[in-house]
Length: 154
Image (tube, rainbow, N blue to C red; front, side, top):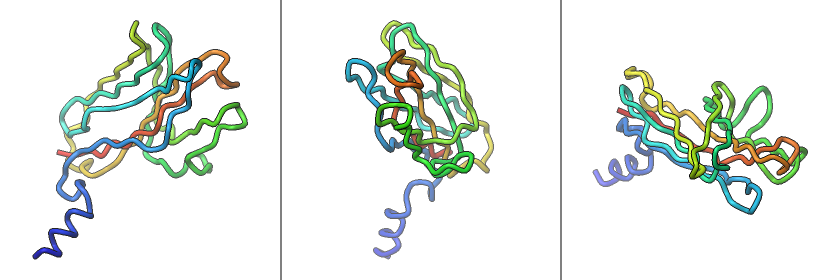
């Protein structure tokens, strides 16, 4: 019995259908050595979830990418080192969906959307990453956040 309990502890929360959010990688500092951040509420079927990007430039814009992979995108291995464009920044997620985001006066942007009420989504993982507009930082004028894993639960 104690071995079964150990296996359940190591397998992780998706076995029981629990949602979770985790960060991976690191952010690229924007001008002034400020590191952008990203976080989210737990993605639960049939409920709204929010992805929040912090430390953006007040009243400026950025981009949010959501994908189904953190290992490959368009034939490239992820994370993709963006060194060619300046800085030591990385692309951590595939771009199946992207949207502009607008930062408020505090440099925070929150996007909220509904997770479909589909039990087939339980245990699936989506990945998110934000890109903060920072003119002159590098050739792409962006400061990426770390990657974010979103395990959908009930």
